[in-house]
Length: 408
Image (cartoon, rainbow, N blue to C red; front, side, top):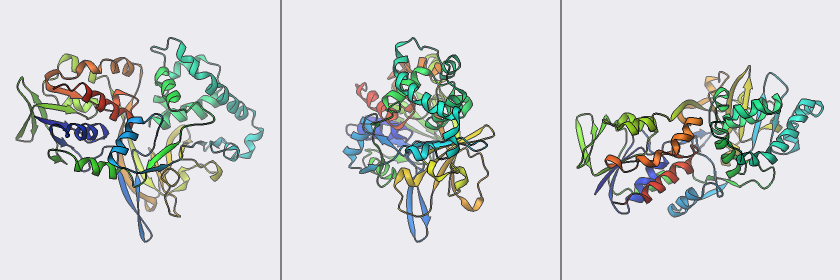
């Protein structure tokens, strides 16, 4: 039996890896590298090369159990990381981090700012009480709806919770309020983000994510195709034909491990049901810039954190401090900024990338529950991070669940 897996992100890689133990599996990737958001880049730092991950970076044992097991099966070592968060509103004096009191009051004037002190109190109260909100009927309720109805201050909304949601899901402020409240609450609860103490320990892959990608590719039973732009997938009663330019490759089944919208475009004859469901999943394109320009970090170094929300004149971006996240052994600080709000000096720009992230709203939750109904129809199976919260664990989990149903 021959199976085609389309897409080499975590969903496609894990599908191909596990199914290769029993079937002949070919893996297709349209881009020039395998791994999707697992993207490792080598920085030339003085006389040495420093590999850094620019997409998938961190995970934990509590909420990434399948990924932990996957890495253990592949013998991929990982080490402790840091998941601190800061907010810097650069046209005000609002600047704070989560790495202790010095970081919270990085700007000492905030010791006397009553609105800031009220925000800190609201954070403590909200984090304590938020899990109980799940007892209510939250269908169709967005985070924005809740925040408008609550009596939470502008400081809490604009300088804490919205920047954090925007940072976690790589989305603009304007979209963060569309996040379904139920999804937001469940994610924060599952990831221990409402805990002010005893939060989960986060990890990063010791030798970077390309090591697990390479290990998976070595265990694919069939062929691996890179830079292969698939024109169409043609499904018949007897087989599946993958069309690449003027060439046709025949398979017994196809697994679409690409984004929902991309998967839909590949199907020559999508059913009404496939169109109805897959068309409801939306994505946001983000520009990621690897650089060493500290002006896209908090002004006060005491506030520097692994994730940093930087705002100026109502424009916002997120900067990841890679040294802190990935335990880089070098003197130079390296940063990854999504959609930078400042022009970065050309001499300080090292690499530019484009990433696409799922965009979640109330409609997303409704149609996630129907994705299972697509599986196995017309010799086609689907998996991807859009089955869950949009993260590495979700993509892997969707592949594992799909394989369990793969009763052929």
